[in-house]
Length: 374
Image (cartoon, rainbow, N blue to C red):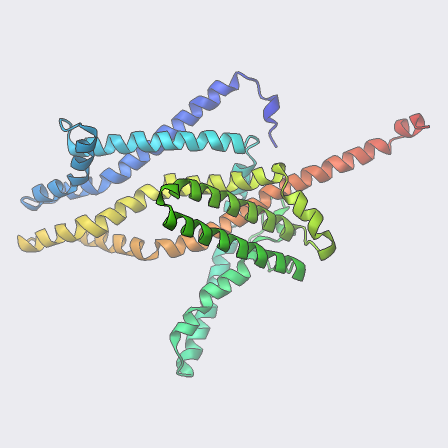
């Protein structure tokens, strides 16, 4: 691990410049994603092209009126506003990330976690096979297919911690291609159920508070995120240690130490930021286009008796697929990434503590120390 205390103070300017560059890149990515649909519709033939571009400029006009920038072209106003807003948010996110992840353990853990994706694919294929067999049985038995479909999220919730929280796998320098599930013991299963219940209660309490006091939306979201991160860190650490009932109170106290909570916060903050700044801009652009612009432009083409271009049809199919399946893909991917990366980062703390204990024991057991002892 990198010892940030040993880094020269002159490198702070390098880190600030690197953060500014990444923030600018995030802003440029958001501006590009919001501009790409308009660039595509600019290739249409007249008179549909002129009407389509006027329709696509509506968000830019709204932003221009809000910022009193009516002299600028609407598309440029929207692009620059997205660039500035996203770059500022990305810079704040990076500054908080550098504070939480000073030794870059969360980033290294996420890179390690990405190498476990073949196992995730195999696991999802296994779940799909289970779903297929269940649906076949439901057809043969003339039962409701809904019961078979419900087996997929149930199998997902029950099985994926058994795969992604294997201590012997997480501790390796490189993950294998595939591995079997591991059983941590009933005490850990009970603790995991309790942690899941606490996380669900925190979500319900946050929703109830926001519904009663809408002004507390952002503070309640921040407190809810902190509580869920604490619960996740505690649950992952208890699972990795295969905690038994007698050691449960001591491990709970140890899990609530800042050196461990900081690792959990760093991983959660890193994954959430990557989702927001990498995936949210294209998803937002596709959602706006598929919901508002594309149906209107398709109506314009039909009204003017213009054949729909093949690229337009392909884009419509792509946008519809993204709108239907993005949530299920992220629902399978994000929990795996968060749990595996959190476990890997916490294991580094465990290994560092064990290495320090072994070093202290070796020093105490050395002949020079024994000779000096009375």
